[in-house]
Image (cartoon, rainbow, N blue to C red):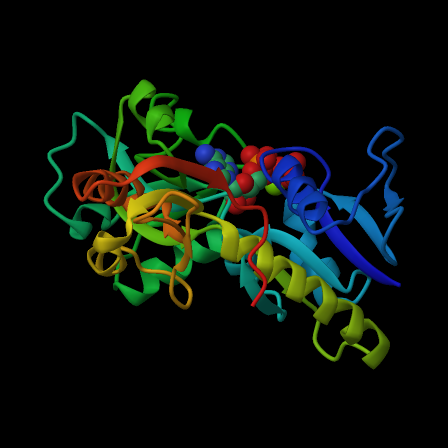
Length: 283
Ligand code: ATP
Ligand code: MG
């Protein structure tokens, strides 16, 4: 049995459970308790506040955990970061009221800064030789300047919408974060074997992210030209069609360049182009 800590509710909860489902581990969410159990894998799920996850994994009350890098940086927990998971992206940034004429970091000299990330902020200020007052508040950091609690804030930003609606401007991004899989040090061998299975499945799920499977018909004479346009894991699959002079070509394409690739393929005569979702890519 291996124990995984995830956020009980909040921004990382749903994506953590979705990732588990994608790798064939289903937790009975209906009767969610403090500790849940997977129906189809020797795994227990411990539901916690995200702040508590790094410490609980460090202390071995949980073997592995899913949490934001921001919380690992703040707690300073001694855990291994095994994989970035591609969700929960955000950054912790310094922001000042938009009325400030901001000359650069020296502006913060002697100012007060409200934050829920005092450890990360103190480290940054020390590294940059800035002497500022750190005011720790647990929530609603963004209202601190308007409420007269602090001159500026150091807080999580993702789209930036919250800053704008509170009359603030982001001036310095200090830490880039996303959800990661963490593991405690010195995992016993039998748990290590379970972890390896989980990592193998996670890698297959991550590998399929941002990729599509593309299938098309093409005049056989154009195959060489098509192959130049198509990057793929090894090389695209080419099969003759029943119709003389035509072939079927299939390959994996990056979502980012999908439209560009499809348009170029149409340009050389591809027809009946199918774009399919990829569930897993297993190497
Ligand atoms: P908890 O009750 O578990 O302590 P919380 O209120 O501290 O929850 P959430 O707001 O649910 O935390 O955010 C959890 C994590 O999601 C953050 O620590 C961060 O890693 C990530 N995240 C991504 N985007 C954002 C965002 N815009 N605001 C806050 N957190 C974000
Ligand atoms: Mg929290």
